[in-house]
Structures are given as C-alpha cells and as structure tokens.
Image 1 (cartoon, one colour):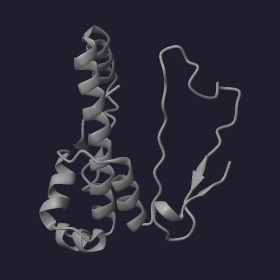
Image 2 (cartoon, rainbow, N blue to C red):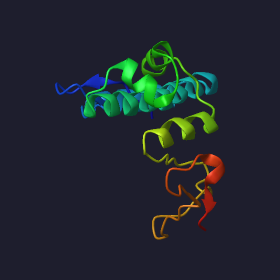
Image 3 (cartoon, rainbow, N blue to C red):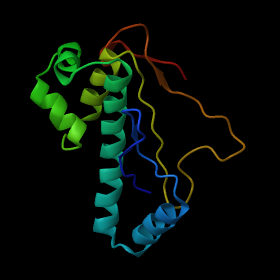
Image 4 (tube, one colour):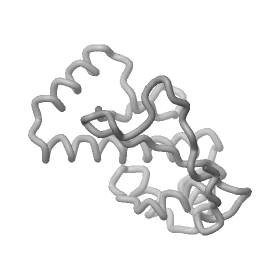
Length: 143
C-alpha cells in the first residue's frame, strides 16, 4: 500500500490517510496496476514515509531546514530535497541520518507467499540494534 503525505494542522505530516474510501481506492489501484506501476507506487510510498518522518522530527524539535542540515552535516538544499521525497536513500545513508537524530530504522519485508517472516503467532526479533551514538559501523548483532 502507498501513502500520501497530508498535514494534520499541527505542522506534522501524516502519511496514512484515515479515510476508508482513500484506503479502498489505493488498494484497488495497486491491485489493478501492472508490476512496474505497483513497484513505483510502493517506492513512492516508502520515500513519502521517510520524508514525513524527517519533517515531523524537524517540526517536533522546532528546527529550520538550515538547523536540521547542521545536525545532519549536509546542506539546507539537501534537507529540502529529502523532505520533498526526491532523495533516494541508500540504506547506509538512511541509517546515518536517523542515527544522527538519535532515532532508529525499522522496516518489514513481505513476500507474496507469506514465507518471508514470522507468522502472527511468532515474536518479532530485532537482528541489529544501535549501541549508543555509534554509526552503522558500530552496530552489533543482537540476535
């Protein structure tokens, strides 16, 4: 399923539209789309979710794009590009950005046959955890 970013009136981005009609229509669109279109829609959804998380961080911490850029050790233009959803992160860069902001990255991978991960009766296990304020190179395996 893909997400659209909308404001909630408190300068926060909400990426999952609570409207049942929107959810139904987006599900129908994905079901009727060809594989390439479905891939692009899902990719846009992930990129929107990442952008919304960073916009929310900035709003919650009353930071300007310039101040966030200083924390991330990048330019204000790069923050703008990230927030617009036009920046295609590598996994390493995403971990680096989130780590600099004191956060953590989590994601889920599902395959059509359902064999990709734990079923509903199994407990989820985090394989990697951030240790202190270390970069991705300082991560340790916790499984």
